[in-house]
Image 1 (cartoon, protein in one colour):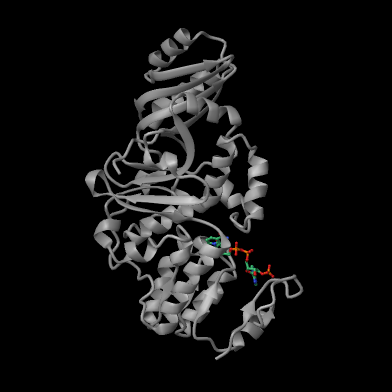
Image 2: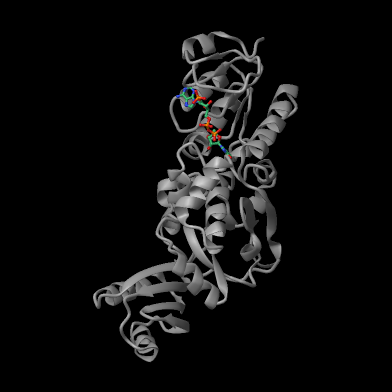
Length: 376
Ligand SMILES: NC(=O)c1ccc[n+]([C@@H]2O[C@H](COP(=O)([O-])OP(=O)(O)OC[C@H]3O[C@@H](n4cnc5c(N)ncnc54)[C@H](OP(=O)(O)O)[C@@H]3O)[C@@H](O)[C@H]2O)c1
């Protein structure tokens, strides 16, 4: 057996570990390994290399959520067919042991409701923005600290969080769900005044991932208004949180969600388990549930936070306009030509119709869901 690392650029400066590096995939593949660790990121060549290792009966540990969200189930099945295992604890909530736990607790993981802050980088950025930093400066800071992904676009656009939610849904047997089924919105549309309006309305803005597979359910990945009394309002920086379940039966996970050290520690824990031959890795669910993807294509009906700009009407006139469009304001604050509104519960249809009607009058409107206050 030997140790070798495949890299993109052999000449790139890197810490000296004594491990031989090569950029030649054929050279790397000719060696024999006890365990393969995949931290390349992206789909290819990761998928081909992981499939080749599993086909040869070698266990694979990966932190690559894009790969697991798109091809995890097929790779898990391949692993099982070759008597080996795929481990991916670090792919979701990097430093928090939730994947292996949920994979071994199908009743808890299949409860039908998930709510989380699952991207440490975007939570770090929004925490910094709520303290007055610009998005650009906060992103530079996140990259410097090693929180941001190789392509930070996936953190900012919400794709990374949507991939993690896809993995969680698939762990629960929702094998029909692909990342493209989930509505995800980036944090790049947020401006400092949105945070100030949210504060005046008694909340904060957080990057969340929500899914409810029940009747009347839905999914949302992106910014949301979180009331100050909600547990998520206190989850700052790169800390992640995941609440699985409903009512009095919620299972909570929380801890560090990004960063080289915590991710490496989780990867190494998986490596030890794989090398010892004690672990089963993460097994594909035994059976798929009834299809739920169609339900998850739009957000669940609920209350909404609207941030309106270029408003020339009075607060009373705006409240009347919203009520006339079946989206009455529950709270309304104003500053010059800007308004912050918490609107009453409504499905997405009336919300979008009202936003269109507002924009036809010259108002610039942004909207996000409001999180229901959960019991802790
Ligand atoms: N950073 C985190 O906090 C974090 C947390 C959880 C999960 N992850 C996941 O961990 C994985 C790695 O992330 P990272 O931040 O460590 O990325 P990174 O710093 O860019 O490291 C990627 C490594 O893979 C090598 N590589 C990339 N593409 C390759 C290719 N086509 N052929 C050969 N080698 C290739 C790179 O080689 P070079 O060194 O030559 O460029 C580099 O050593 C991703 O899947 C990410 O989603 C990261």
